[in-house]
Length: 211
Image 1 (cartoon, rainbow, N blue to C red):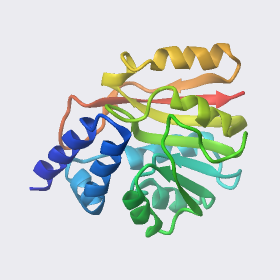
Image 2 (cartoon, one colour):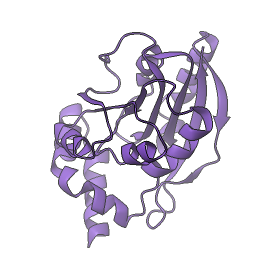
Image 3 (tube, rainbow, N blue to C red):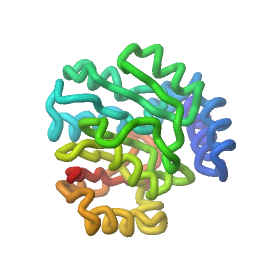
Image 4 (cartoon, rainbow, N blue to C red):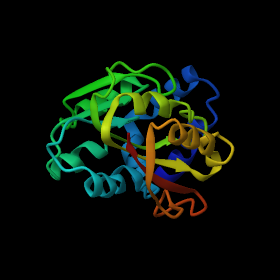
């Protein structure tokens, strides 16, 4: 069953333990990622378009899909009129699938938490789903994402419940706010990641304006 395979793949990526192991886990999952996450009712790549559309008008500049995976969000935003989309991910195999969707103008391999290959204030906004989660990108990765987002732009991203308290997100949020880098605009209630499976798996969406 796809749900069994999806749960096994999730266990593999959550328990990867290192960047190399995480890359290998996603490489192994890339070909079946879309169908298996669909079997769980994975909502986030589609639901994030609502927050993007709420805060960012189409045509205002490039948008970064930070941790784009197989690029599930790209076609949804393209259908809503967003044509200047860029994706980054740590997995070559996932990026190859994303490229096949023909929704992204550019795709780069990069790991959140390290330096990113764009100049200061380059993007109109960044958005990210399912990346600030168990065994994935650290909260410190937000500093680089803020650096490459222009003043007046937006940071739109989800954080998994299990890492919000223990992963230093509160501290990084406060640090960026006190440093005059961003200000909070919206914090959603906790909601389910999956419509079908794992009702206890919860995330929040956060929106900040870059200063």
